[in-house]
Amino acid sequence: MSTFFLDGDEIPFEPGQTIMEAAHAAGRYLPHLCWHPDFEPHGSCKLCTVKADERLVSACTTAAQAGMSVENRTPELDDKRRTLLQMLFVEGNHFCPSCEKSGHCLLQATAYEMGMTTPHFDMFYPDRPVDASHPDMLLDFNRCILCELCVRASRDADGKNVFALSGRGIASHLIVNAESGRLADTGFSKDDRAASICPVGVILRKRVGFAVPIGSRKYDLTPVGEGGA
Image (cartoon, rainbow, N blue to C red; front, side, top):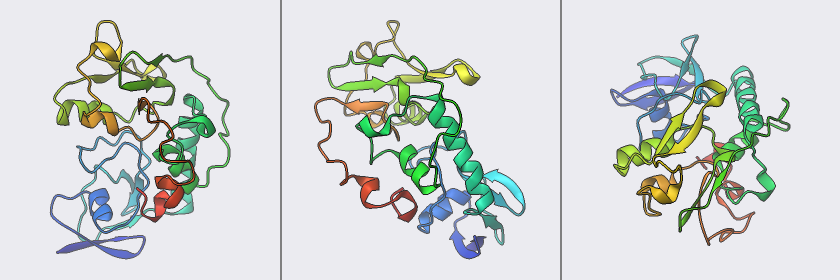
């Protein structure tokens, strides 16, 4: 089996595996938001940017190569990750203390892991709707980080294409595939893969809020960098 070096440690990989896939299989944490092991990567969030043989690349889309030297948790790379996280926090409305996803949110957990203590930039406070039209599910667009995991899950796992991104640049936003724009008018089901894929608090189940108390949730118990990813 071939190997590469991740922060000086030898990591085995199979032919065709990306740096992220090999690191994940070896139990190593590379910061990420849009990557998920069940879906094709597209490298949009840039949190997994590493330095491979002196080149900055997305770990989720770059193939592992024998003998490659990969730098991951360096002060320089983590500083860039903090900046990306700060931009994501100010672009949306992420009020962690009141969010049902708190303690189970990958964005929040990654911010803790990167040592982010303030938003740094001015908040945008965008005016985004909440869609409560569906009998079982709620969409809070304020927290969307445009990772497209729900888009890929609905398309590739559920075969429904319920979600899509619309607009460009700062105007990009999540939409649902219904003329009315309401989730209730799509074929979305609480049992869909897309219903449980959101890494933040956009897609939420109704009537089960705070079933797991804050303090006992996934990232409360195991920080993301210690195997909680």
